[in-house]
Image (cartoon, rainbow, N blue to C red):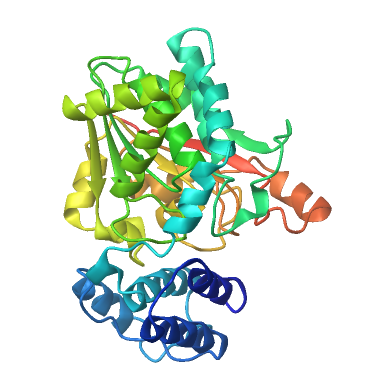
Length: 363
């Protein structure tokens, strides 16, 4: 919060041509965080003022560096887009960074490899879940793991078999809670495309409604990426065309909601969000911040069961997350202790990943 977050605000000024009033407001925000000023009150014209006003009241008299990290991060991004006048202009302050990634070759090289996965549909889904996980290393707000090459011991928990069992159910209704656009979303869409080969299956993608964490996906990012796929030609173009057809046919839906940009953990989600997720055959939860939203941004015992941390959801869930923060559950006994001894920063460097699945007991 004291270093990386103010830098993100100033990078927005470097990448955008804003009038003086906006530039002054954003620079003032960076300085306020560095100076540990009080958290600002939510204000219009953002559509989430009521929800944020309640959340702000729970942190009354707290400062930028003296509040909970999860709350502070989300409050920063909300305040940043307000000062950039996103809600009035529609201009995404992170668009230049997103476009720069799509203009490079990384997303397309990774996508080409994923689309070349062979074998049965189950074998391809098994590989695509892995591809989707490691694409989460590409995060424009925290690029510590983006350049890493996967090693055999990077995956700490592999719950793909349990997830595939849910995906094999007839007429499955899959809900994917998205994280980053660009490389990660391209690999997510490849996974979704393979799922939709089952004509009875339906997928809903949950998205942010405002720019957050630099590269988190909004609906406009989905369709911008699909258009880039079509422009690339070849397998990428055919993927984009299939996704458009699935959307037009009602088998692929996008569900933007203010909740995913807000400061509340998942157990406090609005009723309509929880109802949608609880109807799912499987919830696919992407990324580090969403993982924290599911289990609470707390220092659990690493061996605490993943199912115990998310049982309140009442739906099957698989989390695909590369580790960029401290909170983690569901690790086999001894792994955390071994990593603590050999790599003190293992929780935050983006090297390690988990695929954790919980299926509630029935009967």
